[in-house]
Image (cartoon, rainbow, N blue to C red; front, side, top):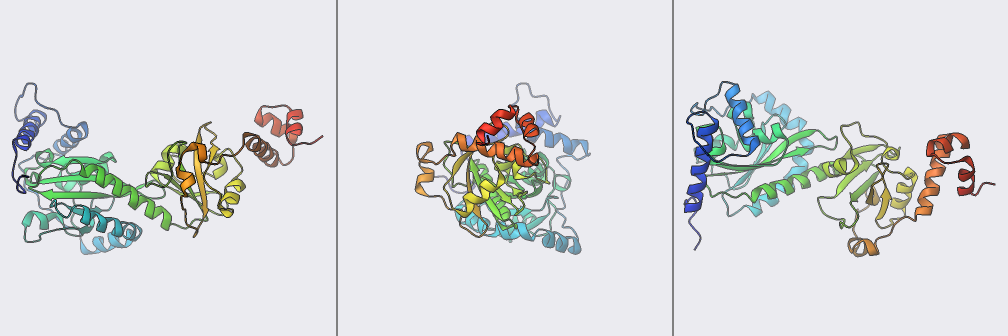
Length: 373
């Protein structure tokens, strides 16, 4: 029989004891030889709080920002709120029996949305589940919200892993949210009060963050959408790379997976021709013809699967495209080679010698490959 909600098992009691020993060791309250260690990012957050002159016993006000600041935050984050709404509703269903609820914040840690089984008669719930309350690390110490925004990585925090005693009733998972320009636009938090530890929520919040980020990218104006993944990995999941491309071939938006796969750093993003070692027209032609996914070369010498679709056209995944490399179409090497040579000649404005030097081949080879005698 499962324990009643809030009941501490022997395992959970041992876990809380380990956290308390780690707190005493790191916060300097006691010399604990061989004390358990917390995650490095938790210790870094604790030490940042100490450096700001904070102490765990201090009371927290859970203050809200001003009403004008709340309005500005809500206005500025409408794209995020629209993208997050359906995802958070799904989260509420997934967590219905756990006692956890969802909090969405802006990049400064100010709450802009809450959803889920929130008991506002519970003071601990009401303190944090309010639009406008400041839950940044500066304001409330170590929490999933503050550490996620500072470390920009998914986190899980349980009870005493929070810095202040006033937040030791909470357990929470958090994941950062990145906009189509690659910048952090906020974070998604899942919080419970006096509830059993649920580390699996870190995976749930991470997957939910991916869905929100992809929805934001899809909502941004673009002419062409490219769905990417490595060869051998079926396309069609939230973990795919997504690129929005304008009519001129410039990348207008990228999710984190695409940025990592293609080695992109910060916006403004480059032109497609600076990333893919094929003419950009090839991508638009593939989208207009609704061709299946193909494996294309990058200038990094790696290859990726690419499914190209025009804006407004479903970026569907057909069974043959998800079946594996053996059934997935690829561009013949000869055609790629010819396309690259033609692109080099075009960029050299017809100067074959210059194009040959750029490609590191002879002029005769350029003529031969292009069937120019």
